[in-house]
Length: 80
Image 1 (spheres, one colour):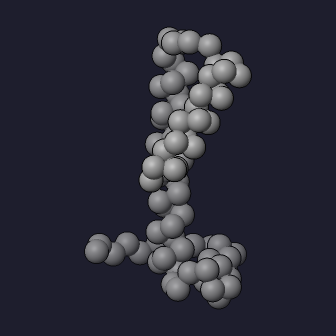
Image 2 (cartoon, one colour):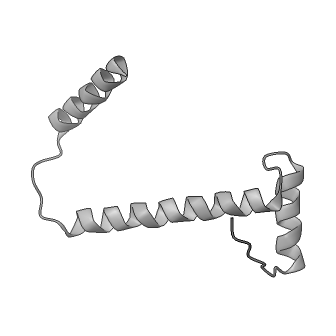
């Protein structure tokens, strides 16, 4: 694993230390890795949403569409 040193203002360092002391994370590194993972997921989701928004419509997203989507999810959950 690579190492990266970062500088934080005291207010941000205190915030990170508080998050760690509350027990959700073992170290400040774990907390920062989680933040970076979440941000990476956010960027990927935004990219997918933008690609979807730029694509041509393929059909109507009406009540029947969402009903069939829910049924597919139920079937997958029952099978899995």
